[in-house]
Amino acid sequence: MIKFASAVLLTVLLTYQALPARAELAIQAASAATRTEGGPMPSGAWNLWSNGRVGQPIRVAVGGKYQVVIRAWGSPAANVWPKMALMVDGRINKSVTVGHDEPAAYRFEAELTSGVHEIAAVFLNDAVIDREDRNLYLDRLTIIPPAGAAEPALVAKRELAEMAERREREIVAATEAAIEKHRKADAKVRIVDAEGKPAAGVKVSIEQTGHEFLFGCNIYRFDRYQNDARNAAYERRFDELFNYATVGFYWRWYEPQRGKPQYEYTDKVVEWCRQRGIRLKGHPLLWGNQAGVPTWSQGQPSPEIQRQRVVDIMQRYQGRIEFWEVVNEPSHLAEPKIDQPYRWARQADPRAYLIVNDYHVLGDGCPGFLKLVTEAKQNGVPFDGIGIQAHEPRTMRFPLDRVEEILDRYALLGRELHITEFTPASAGQKISGSHREGVWDEAAQADYAVKFYRVCFAHPSMRAITWWDLCDDGSWLPGGGMLRADMSPKPVYEQLKRLIHEEWKTRVTETTDAAGRFSFRGFCGEYRVVIELPGGKVERPFQLRKGVPRDIVVTLTGVRREDRPKTKGDLLEYSVSNIDMTYVLQLGLLDAAR
Image (cartoon, rainbow, N blue to C red):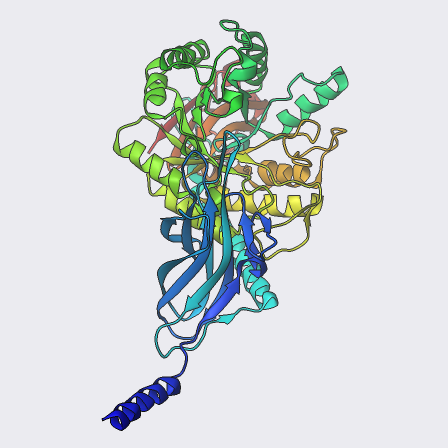
């Protein structure tokens, strides 16, 4: 009996030892290909000390259900532990709370197709509260294939970079067709005389004078420099490039004494912008950050004081400041909530355009913010736009395919999208989160900014792009401006100026046909039509709006026909004697949507 049992045991052991070990790929976090933030620890682990990700592109030979085991631990802040998610190809798969200060294994599943995928661990809720620093510590990621499948393979860095570069070129190339589709509208121009008959052979020029799309920057350094020359240079550069400005209302500095807000300075900025047709956004009325807490208050003021601030400021600037970010970065801070403040804002100015704004959205999609705006919509919180800050993580060169995917995801909520704070820098910071290596210098800043603007302008839900800080002298990030400290323009300023005011502006000159018509397709915005006649020329404005074709009928009210006008082919020919310029200057412009 004993001999039989021994034989069975030996057979089982031999059989077990004969089975091949299940293939798996272990990736040490400190050596992973993607590390957006953080630093190495003495133990060899990686401290992901800010929201971001640690990941690795891999190649799988066989599609199926893969196991991913992330060995991690954390440190809490305000009794809240780190929240970690598995991200696959830029999408959050599942999130868990890392509630231990010792290493533990967290298991996930991911359905993968054959090919290349990026597998990453993502930190979602970084915070420092009362000197407690919430951090996520990562030891390794282990990827286990389905039974019988080969071990996943690391993708060579060079191959990965080549794939990403090809993808980036494809995305940028595709923006041309998307911009043509989403940023232009069709128009027909018809010129008739006082009797309503076609005016053929008339030379007509169409020139775009302004954009419907909002190209903006904050205007925080307006009249803040110590000499007139620098202030004048700042104003000139701002006016040459932008049609949209963000005005600051940070409570801590805006109302240093209770009841004495700094309206005088804001009034000056608002009037300067109004004279130049620059539209305005106020930012922020409420913010849980220290900058949003007045010095005379112990913590956030009461809801009643908050409400009064929202109402007072918005009613004062009603009709002058159109756009408002009422509460700043609400998904990252416990207070203030957005529910009541946005209702106060809607009541204070029913015509105001309200934006909910937050950061780290392009880093990982910011699931907390997506959840917040989704619930706000479901609960009837009034807001018109979703604001996406584009500078966190601060050195990340956001992959453009991921930018497109995240914009698509937020667009599903049916609200317009705004890039509210964009700051690629140029002060030598190491580029992170990208296939591109090197540092953020002026060339890298310009190259990425132009591509980023193309991708955003091409997206049908995008309404505005705001650069954060025009000049390096005063920029919140070193080298974050479009202008150097001496006010000279960097390559990014010149290239965006060419893009916005040359490539993306419409200028057309045509001669009317026998029916007095010509057609064109132009970028949406403000225009002027210039009609050249033998006795001179006249100009009138009109607008071309997104998705609204236009029939523009121009009546020359003072044109008198001869009893038997001469003809030249199919065109009527008018001489100077046929034109009474005192009447031509009364030209009427009828702009009707068809």
